Image (cartoon, rainbow, N blue to C red; front, top):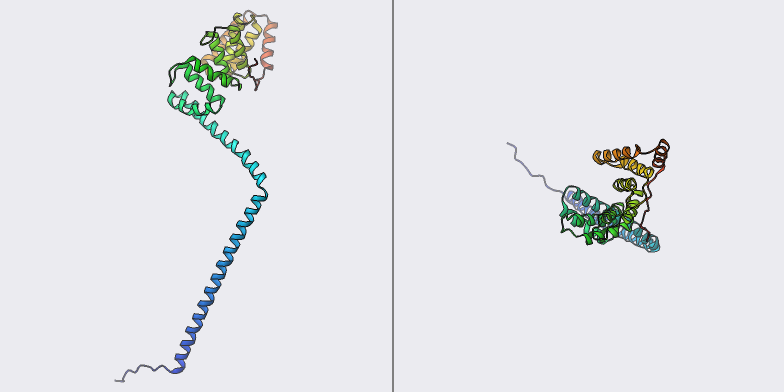
Length: 263
């Protein structure tokens, strides 16, 4: 057998290995230096960007403040609308405690819809003990802002003499405000008062007009049909010319957005 011999390293080969190790170490040092420099450059760039943004914000502070001020009320209003919608939904679903919990903070902040809802809760004893005085307080606060529901309810309280002396003329005044804003129940009530001459001079033409408008605006069939029947009853007492006048008034009528009580 041939004997196995280990190859001997020559001095030249050992020198080549040492040179490669040295070059590798030098390369690593160079890479580390470049990495440190890049990190330094990156931090410098970030600092420069932050300083630039700060300068821009300071230089444009006033316009930015004005923009924020313009947006914040809009966001608050949007949240308020969502909350009062939730309160109305709770009320319609018979969840009166929830409606009260949602509406009360908004009513305290001056939201007219929330104030009107608070008035309904107190007037009907829903979720709270019935309290006509408290109801009237909330209704007046909302009505002064032009809320048609509150104006309707104040008219009803005057008509029935609840927490105020019974006053048909005052009831008609409040119904008129709500009816002009398009509230169909107020329009129907005005039709009744003009047809019967209660609280105002009897006038078949205006009675026909308001019954006609209410019949067109009621959402559910029961009050809509009732308004139409009353319109037809009044119509049988009218001449063709009077009917045409009433119909023309109904065609020309448009809701008024800003119907607030005048003292």
